[in-house]
Structure formats: structure tokens, C-alpha cells
Amino acid sequence: MPQYFLGIDNGGTVSKAALFTADGREVGVASRKVGALEPHPGHSERDMTKIWRATAQAIREVLAKTGIDPAAIACVSPTGHGNGLYLIDEAGKPVRNAIYSTDERAQGYVDQWRADGVDAKALPKTTQSLWAAQPNALLAWVRDHEPEVMSKARWVLMCKDYVRFRLTGEIRAELTDMSGASLLNVVSGQYDDEVLALFDLLDLKRLLPPMVRPAELCGQVTAQAARETGLKQGTPVAGGMFDIDACALASGIVDERPMSLIAGTWGNNQYVAKEPLVDKDLFMTSCYCIPGYYLMLEGSPTSASNLEWFVTALLRTQGKKAGVSEYELCNELVASVEAEESHLVFTPFLFGSNAHPRAKACLIGLEGWHTRAHVVRAVYEGIVFGHNTHYRRLLKFRRPPEAIRFSGGAARSAVWAQMFSDCFQVPVEIPTGTELGALGAAIAGAVACGCYPGYTEAVNAMTRIARRYEPDPKKGEVFAAKYERYQKVLRALDQLW
Image 1 (cartoon, rainbow, N blue to C red):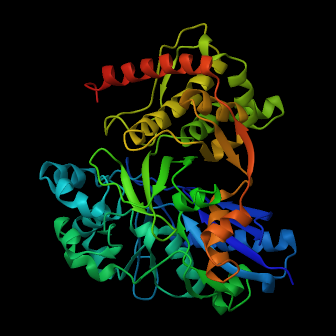
Image 2 (image 1 turned 30 degrees about the horizontal axis):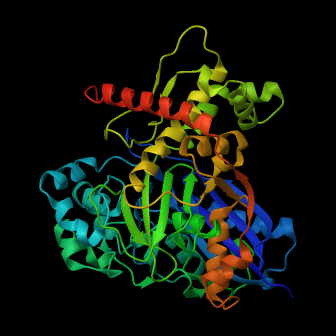
Image 3 (image 1 turned 180 degrees about the vertical axis):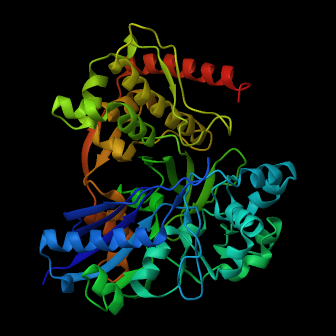
């Protein structure tokens, strides 16, 4: 009987399940949407029970669609968005809604920690910037604003850890996710009382679960989970990983040479190296899924979710009238306008900023003769420029990469991939597959159950490059001028925020 590996990927709004063969071929995918909750401005939450229900339904659907015998699944492995906060009680029940990774309620704690110099004191161990949706800030906020909730809480989990718990009944935290949470010593890979004390969280150390690595087996599918998902009881479940690691792994990132770029809700730009980088000008260093490597990341929630909002709010009916998907329509509109023809500037800050902390989205330079195509091109370009801001920061610490491995929703657009290549003046490569997060998780599962002796062997067998885009030097000059205009707009607006 052939072996299959199930990867589960829970992002901001969608729960996905994807089945892969041992050589990485994607056999089937199913997904379910999970609605966002915004009880107050700046608050972003998810119903944890609905997340699990959506995940279980997606697993059941992919099994039905593919007709694969659940007994042929050698391992299940989860991935999901990092940060945010998932609190459960002793019985495993949620004590409140999950808080998502774009939440802003705890910004005041971050501001105070910076004013008090806590960020500088913590940096040598946490190796990352502080921001409002990290678990450290959110734990402080919940403790101070919802003491009745905190009194019930027994464990703090990440999104994919909660899903794994629902599959196995076992409580575990996982290293890659936790190393991005400002709750542990990233250099040592261990919880650290000094770190917790700096954030006045030592009293909440009781909430931190035992830690595992991504390719470590963490239990088996329970009878209850088998009934809900259709999986076979006793199927091994691996630790899984932070989604930025999963996408990088599925993109073939096993050493320092290429970089990984993920364009989704967050715009993540990253590379790996054997030495951790600790610098106040770097957004984050975390533990990579491959032992002995660290992942250096520059990112912010300034990426393709801006286009998702634009399509939902302003373009959805137009896509239906045109007889094509809204995203195909966007690609056609962008391709109809040359970069030189439009000087509109869009700041991609609908859900967060990588400029001023309180900067918002704007469309600058709009005139009566502009068309929808000019506006959509500005949205595409603004997202590219948001990524370029992070890319340029990374180049302070390393040489330009041989290539950029591009994943996320935007990677499905040829016109967008070429735009990234032209702006960065680096070849852009698109990995094979539509669900790279789930594939990265499946790779960890393949290592965990012994199908491959290590990550390098698994990546070599399970990943491939589908397409490559070469940079146009002339377009590079155009985008360099447009990026400078974008930066001038941000500088001009800085005092307004």
C-alpha cells in the first residue's frame, strides 16, 4: 500500500487539509473558511471551536474527494499562523476566543516596554522585535483586563498546537512557533525565567506546555478525533511547525543561498543561517525547523490581504460580470497598464504597517482620468513595495540571494511574480504545488515517521520548482524610481499618524 502524508494548514481565515504522496505530489486539497470576529476596533479574534470544526470538515472532505484509505496515511502534521493567543482550561476547553496575529489591543504594553527599555534588555535572548499580537503582550493584556478568563486558563497554545491537541488529546508546544513569541530564549531554544520576568509574566509560566520539535511524534489520532475527521484511530501525529517555516521548507530552503518570500495575510521575507542574528533593526530571528539553523525574518501584515479586501469590498460583482474570477480580472487589469503609465501610490496598511505603528492605508495621487486598472496596479505595486522595504532591511545582514522562492496567494499570479522580480532585480522561482504550508507540514510528517532520514532527503524528494521569472533591468530602473516615490509619501505622512 502506498504511503500518504496529511498536512493541515490553519491561516487567518481558512482551514486546509492536503494529502501528499511520498514524493510530494499533491493528491487532493479541501478547505473551509473560518469567519473573523472584530468585537472592538483593533481586536481580531477567531472562534476556536469553529476552527477545529472547519479543520475536521476539511480533513473529511479531502479523504472523500481522493478516495484514499485513511489507513494509508502514514502521518498527520499541522502548521498554522504564528503568534496570537489560544488559551484553554484544564479540560481542554477554550476559555475565550482565540486572538489573531493582527490584533492591536496590546499596543500600549509594547509602547511601555519600549519606553522602559525592556525591548533592549530582552533582545539578546528573544532575538526579535516586540509587537502587539505576540503572546507575551496578549498574555499581559488578558491578565490585566480579563482576570476571570486568566483564572480559568491552564495552557497557552499556538493555532496549530490547538489543532494537534484536538487530534491527539496531548498538550504540547512546538519550538518554531514558540521561538517567535518572545516567551523563550531563542539562542538556547528553552523557556527562560529572565525573559518572562522582563515582561512581568513569571507568574504565568504555569501556562507554558512541554516543548517538542517539528519532526517529533506527539501522539496519535484519538477515537473522538477519528469520528470527527474520518482519519484512522492511532494514526501518528507530528509536532508540525510555524507556517513561515513550512512555506520555506516546501520552497526547498535547506541552506543560506536562496531566500523565501511569502505573500499572504503577512508579507514574510526570510532566510536561514547557522548563526542566530541578534540586531535591533531586524524584525525577528527564530528557530528554523531544521536543527542547527535559525530563520531570520522581516515581515508585517502588509501583503496580499490588502488585495483580498479590495476584491471583497470593491470588485466582487465586477468579476462575476466579466465571467472570470476576481483575481484573474485583477491580473488582466494590472497587465493592461504599464508600470511607467501610473504614478498612484498605495500604502498597504489596511491590517498593519511596517512604517509608523499607526499608519493606515492610503491611495495617493488619484485623478479623474484614472481607471480601475490604475488603482489595481497601485495595490499590487504597494504590496510589492511593502515587501521591498523588508527585503532591503535583510540585505543589511547578507548578500543578495541566488533566487527568491515565492509562495502564498500572490505567487499564483504571473504578472505579480514578474513585478517582484523586476522590483528586487533577483530571479523569482515558484515552487510546485498550491498548498505549500501543508506540504511543509507533510515533509515534517515524512521525517517524523521515518519515511526519510532527515529534512534534506525529504525536501529533495518532495519539492520542485515549477516556474522561474528573470528580472528586466529596464523595469528595475522604473520600479526603483517608483519605490523612492512610495518612500517619500511615507515620510510626508509620518507626522500625520
